[in-house]
Amino acid sequence: MPSTYSQIRLGIGLVRDGWGFYFKLFQGLFVAVAVAMITFTLRPNFAPRFIVGVGALFAAVANYYNVLALQPAVNYLTLADTITFAGIVTIFLSMVGSSISYYLYSFKNNINLSRRFDKYSVITFIFCFIFINLWIGWFATH
Image (cartoon, rainbow, N blue to C red; front, side, top):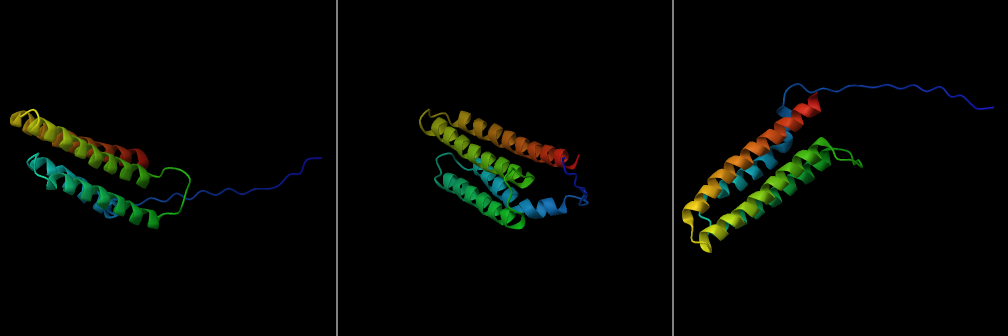
């Protein structure tokens, strides 16, 4: 004869008003991405251009450790993981873009193409990063 057990299930919805906590949590990441974007304004053959990108990458990872300290350990990707991953990928791709710009500037001797590449890269990266963050935020709240 099978046994029957009673079970109570309870769900509690938590909602934060506004985006203040979101910006507090990720302000280090946003500054790191902004610094990585600023590198596109530097000359492609200027060595600190790559150093700044690496620094931005380390800052994004450091911010991620701070975010991880605020949340419980889970076995799935959280919203914070996804946002941080988008920032780290953006910074990495900006470093790849800097390498391409350096190649166009130094080896192809095409300064105009290098500057145009930098201009379109920074616009594309900023637009995509903002769009991804807004999309993730909208998707998480709806």
